[in-house]
Length: 468
Image (cartoon, rainbow, N blue to C red; front, side, top):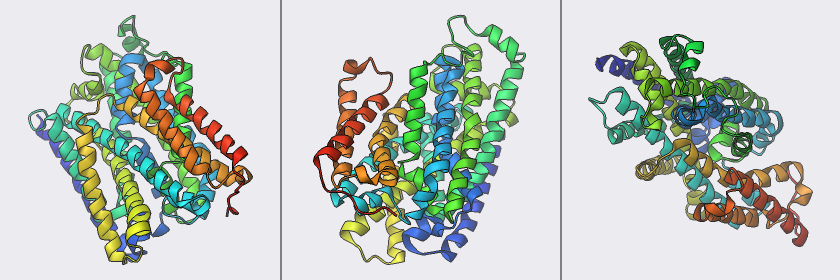
């Protein structure tokens, strides 16, 4: 009966590409070049920006990855999404309006404006590494979904390839407007799919009480803090840091039509993001009962596959939508970095609008190939993502200090804080056994960032200029 879920997926894809094709008109009517293609002409309303943020946050890590983690630690894996929502909430309340006021295209551009060219270059390198890692994880989740849903048609690798073709196509055709409008569809499909999956799966086990009774005695089940309070706190720190300093996340604020829309986008997005992790975790716990001994990354797809073909098609379309929505925004963020911070800044400052868009599209294609190759080596979706996100600590510290405490910022603050934090993460990865007393590298990188920043403030007397 694999043709039924295939039909559901096909209808979903037709809807995505229809909206994408229509979005080309909005891109054509707006500003040209980078601003038109990668920032939607700075004209996104709050509801579209919120859907774009939710789609970015709720990707493979928030669904497949959380269910994978829940297969080991129970419902406490859902705190990952709660941490995402917390970061978006704080962004909406404190920083979103200030970001929009800067009228910039990328975060590294801000670093050069107030610090140095070297800081901009280092910031671009770190941001690209981070976003390439996150993008690669979407292929992994997409491959797991399609190969589990329709094993007669897809292997794990061919599933990854099809996932790539879809989100690359959306990105190439419609730009940021397409990413925003298709994410309105994606978020609706995600909630319908994940919600239906949890309801039907728990019902299949006889209800929540019956499911709890069947959980093995050595499994944490519905223990809300089984993963460990310090690790949960680490997730909150990671996501607070990520939301304030990852290009693909803050680019949503840059593209909002005004400061008020930018603030509302993150507040609305926080409400959309919060429930998905716990819903996915419930399905992961159910997988322990229904499918003991499976590969953890397939926990959620395997559970859904046991439902009726129509329900499975709807639910797994929602899971796949999570990957497509995240990857589209990530690719556009990476294209902005390459086009604005590398090509235009150092090699071709006088590019026409048409040439700007060609560079962006070529960048999307090149990055797609690189991320696909990286995805072939990735295992452990959530763990890999959270390690990659620790790179953002130095970015967040510099940006918040620039906004709220510019008197402490020095011309060399960004350069040294970025470099030492990157080195700290490298040390953690090379010698992890030396830091086992810390539950997550985010604690180590934040410590290094803070110490470096204040040492520079003490020894460098060159203050930055006035902040808008």
